Length: 189
Image: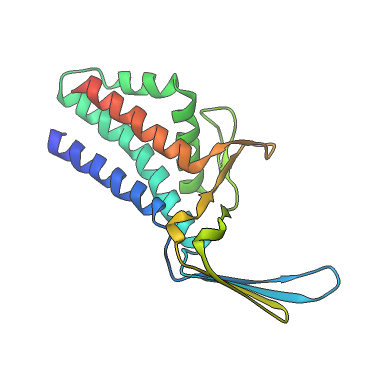
């Protein structure tokens, strides 16, 4: 494993991370039926759909976990013990959560959990300040929101443990995991 291959890996992580930060998109819509039987439609314009944002985050976590194997190969090519990378990951609770998430995403379930928490990702949530909204149109049984500044919207994807308690936010965990992997890369180099 060469230094340029490792650099390309971290360039990929940066691109994937950046993709999670861009929030403009084709929009989304959904229907909700209230207990009284009324169905209302909600339309969001000029913003990423929750599915697209989830795709971005899922890819990022899988590549964060792939980075461990790249770093093991790089350590070996530099004459270091590749098991050192495994020890660092094993001793880092945040990286263990990221490993579990990547394996959960890859296999659709976890048979065992490195972190012991059996984490999974919750539903996309967002907070939009008034300044991010161009217009809100309310019609009978329909609400349409057009975003003028979608990058000002805050997205969150909770990380939940096996009891559905929130243990973190996917965006924060991913960014911190990349920082920790960069530190590990520096130690190997």
